[in-house]
Length: 163
Image 1 (cartoon, rainbow, N blue to C red):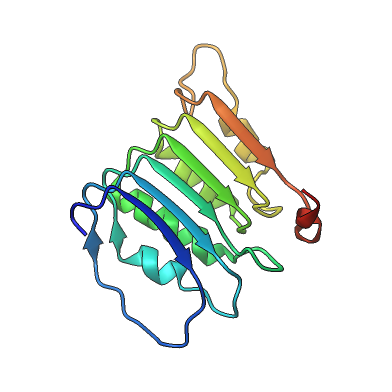
Image 2: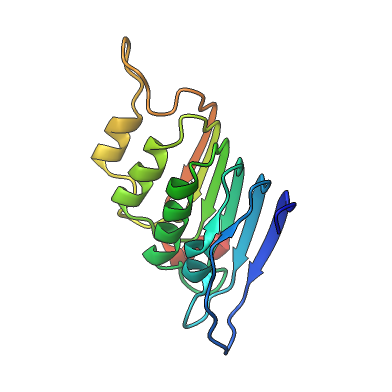
């Protein structure tokens, strides 16, 4: 997988257990993930072994079933981003619970981010502290100086089918 530059990954439930090994996808630039809701998700296992140092675009549509993916999913992605120090320019995340700590940690390590899209990420991610850190102030460095596009939609998970 050393020459892989783009990946569309669909994660569905499976009945076998697997162990992940460290995989360095040094040329991976774009990763799109779609997961379907099952009793157990394998996304944290996948990202715990992934190191994508060239990743610039990450799009994730998680838990396309009845409810959002749990916090472990975004935490594992946060870990992979932080370890690899990926120069992300695009981050899109849908239907996954995110904690304030995880969101701020990722945003603090992404000065290259140009496009941010967060949809149905739960009530704990966007707090007063999050908004305060995102605020652009005169004579201060902003958290994401290259950000040109941001979309955040927060709504109740049972209403998301009305889109």
